[in-house]
Length: 250
Image (tube, rainbow, N blue to C red; front, side, top):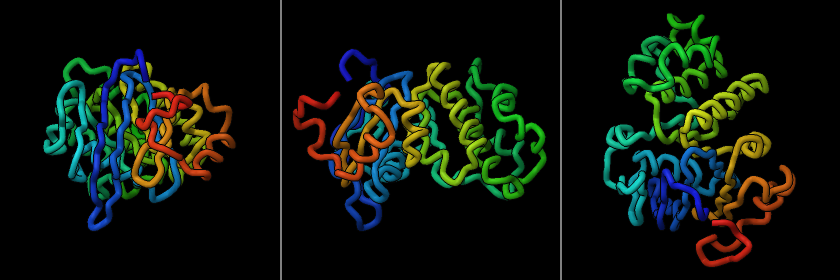
């Protein structure tokens, strides 16, 4: 990714999920103020990678640099202080708390663009459900709440794990517009996504993951369509991109 300022650099990261050796030398540069999508088959380690970046899975070897700071060994709340936020797979809202109470869980950065009011403007249905418990919300509303909870902290880097999973097309459109608003506001987005059409509609860079490593990194314009990307994923990534394949962008 020559010529790009980097928000996040992952260097040779290894990690286990329980007894399973999942991340096997992941290396990836994430350009600042861009959307980078990680795609790949189920079970290749995409969610583990996102959780490792956020500090929810320990690193056994390698570095994760936020700017110039290696965050390996830092607790998740310290990483939040450095500007990382996570929209986890499965939404993971607190069913016994109201929408309003979720907003109070996160301290909003002073002078941040994404105030409570701005977030509610992005997600109008939440404005009507402020006193509702999260467990009373629809799946789409819960996803809106999960994104809003992360966004109100005004992060520099937003990690999103399968944000369109199980959503109706209308809500997928809302999530799409929200990611665009994040990028326009200068937030770096690292997105794990099974919906290849959604990923290609947003991403500036596409990273393909296979067997616990990033094997290809492409600029969006280097990939023609969903079928081409799907074929690449099905065929397998090939060599990791840091091994000097001149046909890969890195």
